[in-house]
Image 1 (cartoon, rainbow over the protein chains, first blue to last red):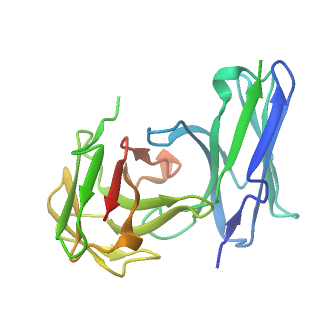
Image 2 (cartoon, each protein chain N blue to C red; image 1 turned 45 degrees about the vertical axis):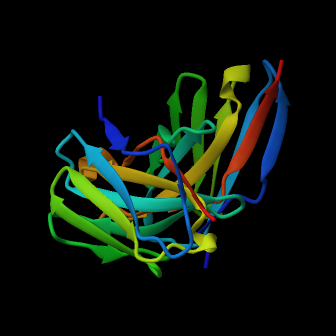
Length: 113
Length: 115
């Protein structure tokens, strides 16, 4: 059963506007949430993370918001740039275990120049 | 910079062949992982290892095995390749330290086609 879900397979945004990528999870024991970015023919690269004890983390143009009561997190990219076009994966890890990550199915972001 | 190297970018094999996918990391990380990525399914964990000679099954271990004889090397083995194992295979590493926020570092991937 998919514990981390990304319900939007794709998203298109105009350059300069905000991109909002969403992620839902079911397991309340997750303690860290991460976003990865993946270009075609490359491995995923870590983008930004947030601890379950926080509700916001910001790094330059990227901000992740966590709503624990709704079991929902989102990644905001402002302003969006054509180079941001990629597949974005949401992931979560448990408080115990060998730091396994549980990945969502990904959202393909296209930023239109 | 963490470097995770997968031995092949592209592989084409025939049904029934034994296939070895190699992954080497240079950061002395304890944990290593093998995933496969398929459209609409995201990344699914096949096997992982948190120490030399240790291995644990992930979500989809059937048809695969792994080997970790040295800390820096983690091999994925397809005992008898089948067409449904055509996929992108991704190796990842992590320190296992809670301070590292469970970040995993990925190789570039191996796209395997089984004919």
